[in-house]
Image 1: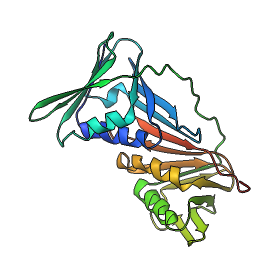
Image 2: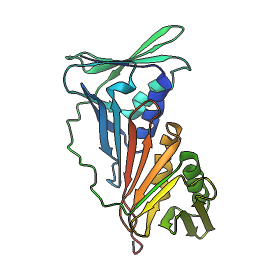
Image 3: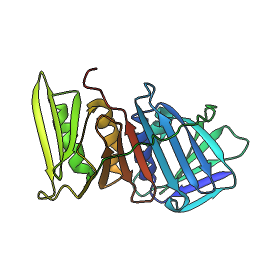
Length: 250
């Protein structure tokens, strides 16, 4: 049997919203150490990697590895009903193909979500030597991406000379956002060498849904290589996204 309780159900709501922006279906793997999810979007351009350790929950029971295959749109619709101050209980009996989702506040409300038999896809996180590691407030990165979206569908990210530059250009115009330590918005930067790459704003915008869960975003990339964005959750655990670059000659 698997049973987990979160003190604030809205945390799970934000997690599901952050995952569902990229993937329609996926398999949570619950085991004695916590819950994990690794899934790719249908186009295989982006990956989401979620880890929620046992300590992130108010209480947690899981005797053996338990796959929980879900349709994220269905789960998101249920999670829209969670209220402020309500606890969340997730429960799955060993022989049942349903996940019970229970909200506990002024009343106890229980939903039963039909689970999917999706199997267990073995996905490995990209192993990439990152030349740039930048830590910025998640809100600052979100605003930079929104600025870039005004003029283009793609954004060039550059780390050099102790600063992070986000620039975009297209038929609609140009935008340049420079984030420095002097502004107080560049919390830290580690450079092995200058790094620059072009990425899809459509995907980056979707990934920034996780900014609701974390104050800080950790951005890692190398020239013309996949981007890694990590959000550490205040409740414990993390959401990590990977995004393939768009090559300049595409």
